[in-house]
Length: 624
Image (cartoon, rainbow, N blue to C red; front, top):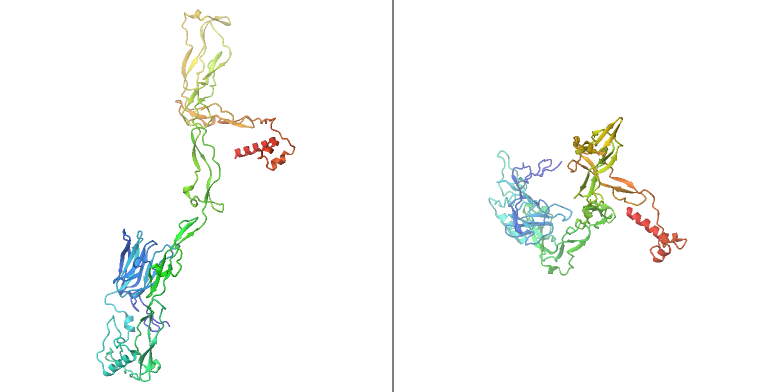
């Protein structure tokens, strides 16, 4: 069976959060909060006050920062991180309890500092923050007992005569035997009776029910034996103020020989009190802090750590002047570091040709971030401030002005005899062209071309032929007809001088016509020069859709759009033979294979072979 907190076998009682055995958590209250004030001045700022009697103390910084927590008593004694000296994480005694000071790893952790203690405290303590950067928030929590609460543990385990809440119960009466016993203890131990109060059984009134017979008091122990201090425990430290306790054994009052402890009254055994020992300070030592994060994520950087000269005294580690550590070699405070080798920028391609043949365009090249292993990685791995440009503007000079033409009309202006076919001609300016064309100049292309549909027949008098088709298929144009003076003969017409018909009203020979609105039509420039003189090149022209008012339109039929590019000069190239550049030796192919053409002698002796190789290499580079 298990033992409960009341030390009874089979008991199921446990200690509640208030520290009371079998309690119901109502004898205390939890005090908690978060200190979020915005601070402006550097230095110590008070966060919270921990009252006397507080237990389960937890003071935690909500996230990592360059600030530090500090703790001191109300009397002004520094416990942790006082006087601008930063203590190492560890355990520190203060306020009657032991505080655990934690500072997580500076590199791998994001948690903040903390103070933890079980308590209870025996004095008021103040928690401070050494403010150096914005406050991330400080969470504090502790438990304080309720009013007029006495722990059942204290009552259950207290021996008669022991202090209750700091007050000693005094016996109702004393007798001479007890006074003699006190004097004997003083003689044996060299202590005053006030230091070790000796309380005998039966000194306190019993609180038994009236219907119960009082228990028989146990017989008094033989006073031939008494307790005596025979030595002290080993000091807890070899330097810097430790502690030790006196050792009491049962001895014969007359012979002072040690006898079993059962010979003495256990209730009269003095309670050992702590005594200080080895008060001389420990040797100073260098307290080495943890390395900071590397100043650079790649490449050579720096990291720092704090080095303090420290001494231990009274279970506390104090910061002292550095000259006290001169007997020791001081560790380095800075060090170089390199997490990994930095990646670098590489230009993978040459600049492309300009995006336009004239005017201002752009050209590009391929720029990649490459690791030290040769792999392409994200651009963030490289220094963006050193990234080469992968796009830039290029100026190809002013753009050309070109003549834009429509196709010739399908109809001749005369049904017989001489007539004309027409087309529209316009010079487009101030436009970024994609073709290498020259300016319009004064050489305007013709808008008409002659046509003839065969001879016409005549008639006497003014003879007007039929109107020709409109000179253009759309928009405003003209129609013409032949008007002649004729004399009709049998089966024939004789053409006369117009004067012969002057007395007659001459019919008009021309009139305006308008078939329909033109809408949008395709216009194009003349073909450009062929890109190559042999082995297949190409030539280009610009094609645009223009409306009636000669503005750009999108209403043209895409299926009727004239070609913008066509092949040209497809014949094979005939190499030119230079009589002054010939091979003087039959084995010049060996010179080429050995790559000796870079030397002047071989370049002259094998001129033809070296020239062919150079031309092939230049053509290969051009295609790249």
